[in-house]
Length: 97
Image (cartoon, rainbow, N blue to C red; front, side):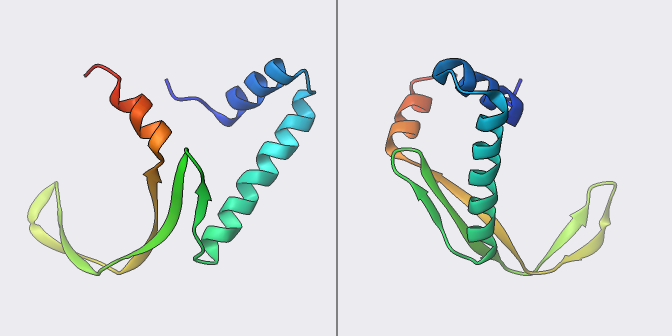
C-alpha cells in the first residue's frame, strides 16, 4: 500500500512532536510550491532525494487496446519526470526482486 499525504503528516508529527495541523500546513505549502515551480516549467531539485522536471512529449499515434485496428491521435503535451537522487537510488536498488 502506498503512503498517503496524511500518513506522512502523522509520521512527521509523531517524530517531531509538532501538531498534525501545523505539519499538514507545511507539507501542503511545500507541495504547492513544487507544483507552482513545475507549472512555470522550472525544475525542482532535492539533494539526495531527486529532481522533478518538466519535459515535452511529441505527438504520436496510439492504438485503442479494445480495437487495435483503430488509430488514436495523441497530441503533444508536457509531463513531469522524476529522476531519483543517489541516496534514494542506492536504497531502492538494495531491495530484493
